[in-house]
Length: 436
Image (tube, rainbow, N blue to C red; front, side, top):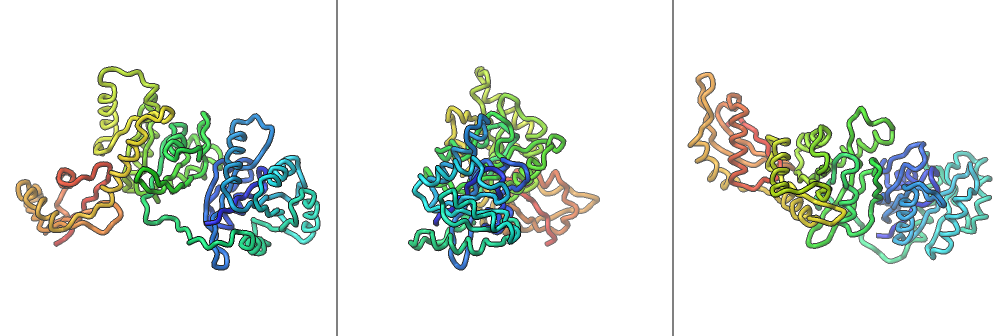
């Protein structure tokens, strides 16, 4: 799949153009400069041809801001790995110092560059675009990424300039497991993503809230293949002040909803706080598999049974949902990173397993006969038949004569018996009583 990178200084409309090309509001757009920080990928289809698009953060020079230096690195990586560059400038401001600096870098990078003049909303503004010939990058394409004018001609030129070799169309890997890394701000989610990928895919700084978008990456190493989603940190609603952070939280919640397994990261030095519990309950409500990763384990003072005691503390906090794998990591020291992969894969296998009806009835009906549902109001419940439902998460239907008289404690008994016979570690199990 050919790759097209959108680059430019902050707040020229790169994310707006990215969203228009991929056809959905995938990147956060706001009037504030510097919203996009990480590289953000999507797919564009035009007249039967497909290519990938990467949105980058605003490129600045000579800035002391910790984010700006990291964004520059991300932009340079995008320029190196792409086949074509769309250099976005803004007609209203003319050629700025940043534009001149970026143009100088692009002239030397030996990649095909299309100069795109954005925010050309009227015919009068089109005459102002001719000043950008001074950048030495050819004829500027006048567009308005907000309303879509001129983007058709731009896409025709993009298709013409891309490499001619036929590359099979990329899909969004719908058949692969989707793993979301979630947690509070600054617990090491982006660091874990970078450690697993073996490259600085996402920006990492000590400042909480660095990651704003949910960034998806195809992971295929060490015999494991899945989509890895790094999300923004989820904070309490009362602490979410900016519109940007509100959108980031929505993206993180959507990432949880669209995932199969969530890796919940906890800061070992602070323990499980109310917000960790809120995120865990969100995962549980959405019926997703879960792996608990206790990060920054290197900061904890160790005793003889520290890990055992901490595991007990975590399971007590998360009770009654305590059938979960708990991994203690130090991402900075690359400690037990591979264990996270193994645990996540195991949970996904448990999450997606389908148990034959004959095996279910053979193992569980004798257990139910030995301990039948307690009589309620003089009524005796007879469970005759069990089957697994065709849902995404593990769900089981127990057919009986009087389902309304089966209480919640007995449903928990049935779930425990299911877990004792089959491995559902890290997965929610739903029990439904149905009329026979």
